[in-house]
Amino acid sequence: MRKEVVLITGANGEMGHGLISHLAKMENKRIVALDVQPLDQELRACCERYIVGDILDGMLLGRMVVEYEIQTIYHLASILSTKAEYNPETAHRINVEGTLNLLRLAVEQSEWQGRPVKFLYPSSIAAYGIPNLETKNKVGKVKENEWLYPTTMYGCNKLYCEHLGRYYSTHYRQLAVEQRKSTIDFRCIRFPGLISADTLPTGGTSDYAPEMLHHAAQGLPYVCFVRPDTQLPFMAMPDAIKSLLLLEQAPRENLSQLVYNVTSFCPTAQKIHEIVKQSFPAAEITFSPHKSRQAIVDSWPVDIDDSAARNDWNWNPDYSLEKAFTEYLIPAVQKRYRDPEKAS
Ligand code: SER
Image 1 (tube, rainbow, N blue to C red):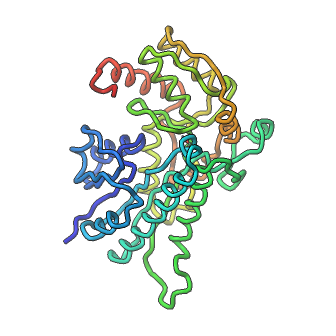
Image 2 (image 1 turned 45 degrees about the vertical axis):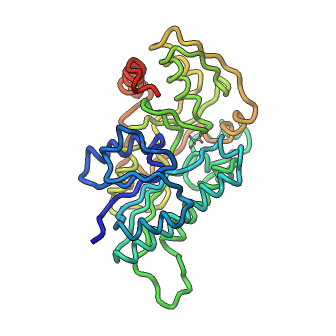
Image 3 (image 1 turned 30 degrees about the vertical axis):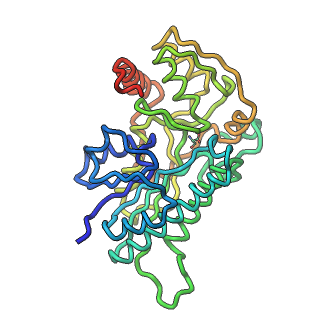
């Protein structure tokens, strides 16, 4: 008999850290963690197994089918927006071909199991693309089906993979004589910028917010790469994990769409600066906008409309901006950098 497991790709990343800790605490689930980097020591005990490997490695994914009955896949592995621009074609391979491999794996698993495999996919505000700052400020909150003209490879990849998820869940091999009964149960969240106390993102364009905080907590100067008036939606990591788990648990019949926005607060970079300074008055934060990264952020919405998630699966964030900083981020980063073991 194959063991029933939950598969998490990109397990050693920002969101993987939060998700593994929560799943291990909340549920009696066996976790198989996959990442190109070895899983951090403190997460290993939470997992049935951790595998160092690449989502582009077909043999590796094939072996997983042999060994495990995968009930749910959290496909978190991705190259973020700034990093992807340094090698767009490689990013495309990882973000799109990697996702395609996981979708095929899910379909195959569904066939074996005779039931849909849940496929949780984090998309992003990078799927949006607003032509200029004036329009960005004018349109304000955007809905899931508006302004879908991404300017980054990462954004294009995320938007396309949302479509692939829809294709695999409802139209896969639609011309086959025998129609498949069980394919995948694809569920996708478009996340805003995320801020975690435990990890720093690598290669994103919304990274100025978490970077400002983590630099201040370590007593390091920080040069912010966007203008002070730059505004984006953000969310604290515990709320991001909460939303993923809520969507995973929602009854299928309650879901009116496959892709949902979620968000919590939308501060300017100046506001983040001020709130960081309140806790770390000695923080040295300056602004020196990077033209191209600024242009990417300027193409992302000021705020996103998450009313569909609120209506369909009772989404509601726990953390306002103030609460996120005072009750979660500040105490946790202070503790983290007081304990040098955790500051790697
Ligand atoms: N945080 C991501 C990035 O900046 C956006 O989803 O790339």
